[in-house]
Length: 380
Ligand SMILES: Cc1cc2nc3c(=O)[nH]c(=O)nc-3n(C[C@H](O)[C@H](O)[C@H](O)COP(=O)(O)OP(=O)(O)OC[C@H]3O[C@@H](n4cnc5c(N)ncnc54)[C@H](O)[C@@H]3O)c2cc1C
Image (cartoon, rainbow, N blue to C red; front, side, top):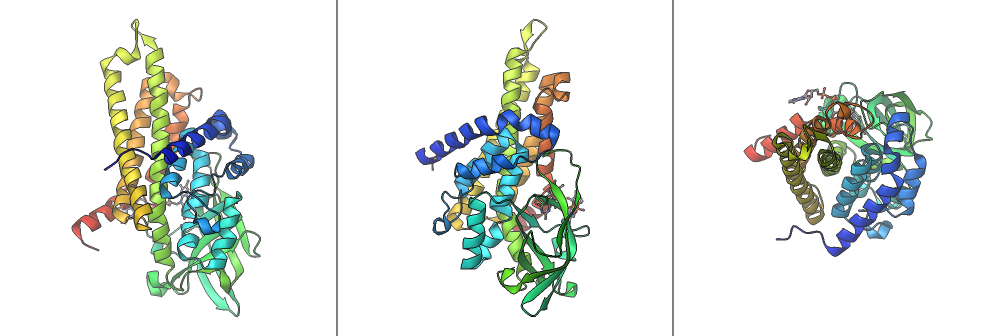
């Protein structure tokens, strides 16, 4: 048993940390305030090789799920708004292509992401959130084309994505068996971006409606077998739950570091906050939560790497624990900062807002617990 990163992984972590300290962290508060999407930073990430991480070598990739998790943690520590762009583009939106695409689809789309393309994963609809099998976007075959009609909501990267992996049903009465997966390029006629959500956090990243209005895509754009879209979506989400666990972990680590530094510096009643037992207990609980979250997250990444797919139970455990640990840690960080923590002068206010979504997207905490319980109890 070995809880240490390898030398190669440590070097990779140091490289990403250095990149984030130069290119992301100094701008994170400004991007949060202006809500502008910093296209140039994604290009710089691609230039530094960060967008090749975890793709198969034969398509120009390098690294694996563990290095991808390291990158997700480090980028999230600097800016969760940038990390969601990254982890959706490389992970959530690409797992269906990497796991189920044919050779042509893989080499075409993976190459684009390695070069800095932004991608979206469009599953959620107004009446299909946790219950994804209830989706209502339809597809029908017309000659050499599939015609898609419907509307997705809350889609991360929706405003910027060059292409989108999406899911539609041939016939709703078939339930999950009617669902197939597709890839749709942004410039396809009949595809458009709708309402841009005004969110609590993750401000540099967009979340939008996506509209398919007689959107005709070549039959070659179906991913995997017809009727297997539900499974393809769930496999991708399982794997991406490890990314969200790493995102929560990165946010928590940043909040912890800020709180520790502040507690050592700020004096009240003639002493540093760090010498007060009430503050020490908060710091101890934060450090313990982060350690436990890190162990669960990297175990899930390691299992995904070893088994070639994410184990649903361990991925759900990592996601629910890390996201709720990040909630507790960010809450305490704001508390340690007192009134200053409630202002935009300190980053803990941003961490507190950015953390909240990690308990909701890619399956709410309730859905994670359902997944874990079904596996433990052996019930459907
Ligand atoms: C900023 C943001 C980005 C997002 N990005 C994407 C994206 O890129 N792609 C995408 O497809 N989607 C995305 N989503 C959608 C997200 O995954 C969903 O919001 C989430 O899965 C929950 O669905 P819902 O909002 O419809 O909530 P609902 O499913 O309506 O759930 C509401 C509440 O009921 C609970 N609940 C529901 N069913 C059960 C049950 N059976 N047992 C117990 N409790 C239950 C939930 O846990 C929750 O507390 C994003 C959402 C946001 C806000």
